[in-house]
Amino acid sequence: MKYQKGGVRKMENSNNVKDYLTFSAFSSLRKDTEGIWIRHKRENGYRPLWKFLKAKNTDWAIQLDAYGARLPHGPVYIYYTKDDKGKYTEPRILIVADADYHIQYVLGLGLHKSIESSMALIALEKIQSFPGNKKIKRIAYDIALLAELEYKVNNDIELTKNELRFLYEIDSKIESFYHIDDPKIAELKAKRNVKKDLAYVFDCKEENIGTNITDFDTNKIIYYYGSLIWEKDFVPDTFKDLKRIIGSAYFPNLINADGLNNLQYIGNYAFFVSLKSAKGLNSLKYIGEDANFSSLTSAEGLENLQNIVGEAGFSSLPKAQGLNNLRNIGEHAGFSNLISAKGLDSLQNIGGIAYFSKLITSEGLENLQHIRGYADFGSLTNAEGLYNLKYIGRRFDFRSLTSTKGLENINADYKDLDMIERKQYEE
Image (cartoon, rainbow, N blue to C red; front, side, top):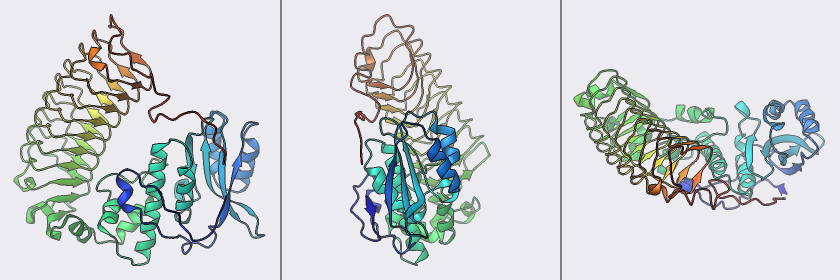
């Protein structure tokens, strides 16, 4: 398939990025975007391709060294643009899949092997054609959206509210293939007036936006941008109007959360490692990364918490009462001292390891459906409350069970969590 400059096909919307999909052609960014995709088979090994990529100084050969030999022999797709002689020999995008055509990684020629801005939409279109890979497709969307914003900012084109929400990662983090923040994010924000942008997004005054801890001394701060670090063991009265922290919340010595009653949203990490009581966090709904409540002995006060995108650290919690609206834990669920799950009635998904090693009864977990990682239920004597559990991604420990009643549906209809059917995929 050959890609010409200009002409952008309409992309299918996905998740919470649907409002941002207003693509324009990237032909004005670089002249050499026209190219072709070539499928390289790996049934006979990957060394010839490795030598070719090394000769091209792409730095991709290192990635193939690290992962190529271990992957089941699936296809490699490379997007080539023209060389000086007009032949399609210049590699610009690399997509490596396994034998089931599940994408393993995507590389470009940008910083840290990132996708070049001019290649973003081309990569997105190709990734869209693969089966499954929901997370990979989300990353590709974010890369293409960021490229669009880069074009707009560099050409003094006004950004919409939704585009600003995306750039400042207000609703979710901008994803990357490389587990690092795309440097373009910081570059673009450095060209902006943060307080002006966020005041426009939240329909408030610039004086209601905080970017430094000293802003609380003189203004009514409702939205704080950046990591809010507070090392004292109490909450000052100046925090009483705070609704959002668009960054991480570091309260390492806080024992009592009274004074944070209006806080609804923490964009990144929530570090409340010394907190004994959650009363005062009664408005908190969302934590965008790991939540560390390792000293918490009662979850009362967290009744509105719905989503923890990262790990849930509740290692001292004996009872789950107070977590009644928690629906999703994106990574590991750390409930290693929990003896009663009553209160986790809404929990549906655990994206990593499920630590419930002291739980004796499954009552309270009736809505749990997916555990992506290892499931530790070593003390469980009755699994009847797990009748909706359909998937466990790795090993599991149910050593104390005398009956498998309640576990009948586990992995019955799943090949993997995205329910990707094995099929041959050819271009």
